[in-house]
Amino acid sequence: MKIHALFIAFFLIVCSASAQYFPYNLPKEKPSIPLSTSMERNYDSYLAPEPKYNELYTQFKYTELKGLDYNNHDGTISRRDPSKVIFENGKYYVWYTYRNTVTSPKGAASATETIPSADWDLAEIWYATSNDGFTWKEQGVAIPRPPKPNLGHRSVSTADILKWKGKYYMYYQGFSEPSGTRGDDCPVLMSYASSPDGPWTATNKIVIPNGPKDTWDQYSIHDPYPLVYKGKIYLYYKSDFVGRPNLVRMQGLATAEDPLGPFTKNPLNPVLNSGHETTLFPFKTGIAALSIRDGNEHNTIQYSEDGINFNIAAITELMPDAAGPFIPDAFTDTKDGRGITWGISHFTNATGWETNHAILTRFDCDLSLDIDDQGMKKAHVYHKPEFYYKQGLNKEQQERIRLENEALKEKE
Image (cartoon, rainbow, N blue to C red; front, side, top):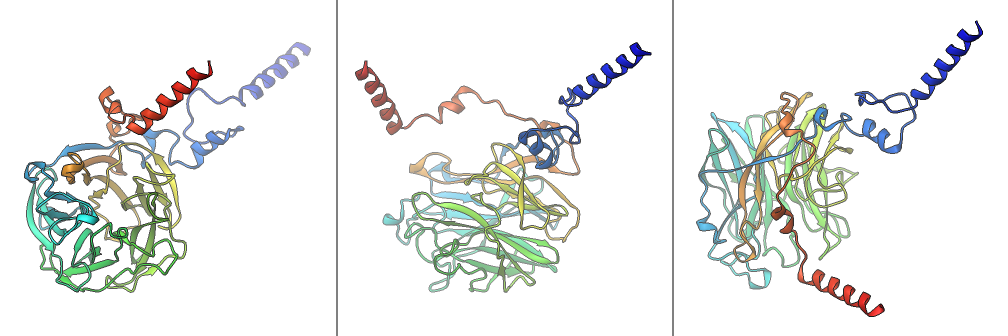
């Protein structure tokens, strides 16, 4: 009996001790043992403890688009900042900032009525259609620059599309001076149409005004991005503040019950502390966001149950700049958002600053509840050495290192 009792006691001690060790097979549910802060976060902050099971984790794949000409990439033609992709009339539609100027951008000091200051200066909003999402046929101008003194007479850019009760609404930035004169100052304008092919009627009125003096969005309302959520129009936007040379970029939200407004800015703005461009989509009962560039939480995919309070759901790499995804349920007010698998984005400064222009590209991903593409779920991407060497030291950094080496030698 004593031996039996000792064995039981030993067994219980061993079991109790082993229960404190993290198991070899990673549990899908958080184990009931003491965990480090990092492991607590692994279960509490992400949708799954491994990227391959995380529906909001993905890598991104890129494909060159066919059918769009860039004038031998001399910098005179640029296409950038695509809208969401929609499917209407048996084909895909995308709208984008289109610049066709006599030169590449030359900066605000050299800008004229024909010479652009920036890549999005002296631009219009054009559109293209596609049967497969890879080969596109440009259809021409959708939103031209209005005549002076209307807002946007210098440039209209960075458009996004809303479908509401059978009609179409385009929100975009309207510049009345060359970008860079002070910054990228502009409000949001809007045009509407009965067909995605137009014709578009401009309201020539500010839809989302800049904020009051000394507030984060007092100068610019960029990247207007509408979704239909909770029976309303949720229009996300970006602003930059603090001032040059270290602009801070964050994102806010304005809501309305009608496409013409009035829009009410959320009192918690900014609702996203990172992200150079706006890219969001319905997901499950909430809203997911790509925080693509800038800020402490760049290169993250975030999720909000209410479209306002976002948390990091995944960290990834090589995210698409200015992504305009194809979102079948963007305007359905869904309570079961299915996610995205592809879209159109851009590459800026495609050939160098002397011929500065942007080109459109296709991206693919698995941020969808309807597919499970494990080829998109890999935890890292391998690059050749040349990829890293392109991120080399500049002349000032090389000189700093040289001086540091010289100073060490003098101490010997």
